[in-house]
Length: 208
Image (cartoon, rainbow, N blue to C red):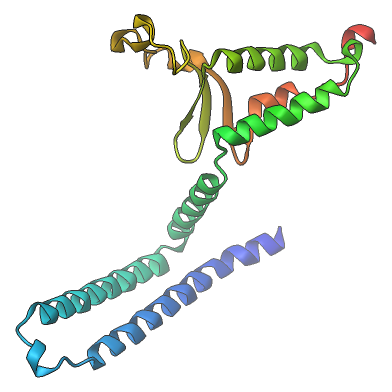
C-alpha cells in the first residue's frame, strides 16, 4: 500500500519530466529547422512555401505540447486517469483477438478434449465444441471487431450462398436482435465464452 502511494505521488514528477523531454526534442528540431537557409533561387517559389509550412507546423505542435504539459502539471490526477485510459485502450487494441485466434483456440480446445475418454468428458464443453463445429461447417460464423473487443456471431447463411434469402438486404440480421446472435466475446488475447466452457473439460459430474 505504501509503495502504491509513493508511486502515485511520483506521478506528477514523471509526467512533468516526460513533457519536458518532449519539449526539449521539439526545441532541438525547431532549432535545426531555423538554421536551414534556402538559396536565393528558391525564394518566392513553392519550395519556400513548403519549408514555411513545415516550420509553422513544428511551432504549432510545440505550443500544443507546452499547453498539454501545463494542463497535466496543474491537474495530475485527471491527467493520470486519461493516460491510464489511453494506455489501457491501446493495450486492448493490440491484444484484440482475430478470427484466426478464435479458430486456433477452438482447435486447441478440441485437441485437449479429444484426449479425454468420452465417458469422462464434460458435457458442457463437448456440446459447445460440437455446436461450434456445426456452425463452422455451415459457414455462418462471423467476427465483428470494435477495436478493443471482438464479437463472434452467427449469420443466417454461408457467404457463398446465392439464394434470394441470403442476398436480400431486407432479410439481413437486424441490429435490435444482434445481441442474440453473439456466441463469444474476444478480449485481451482470448475468447472468454470458449475459455469458460472448457473449465473442467475432463470432469463428467454424472460419473462422480
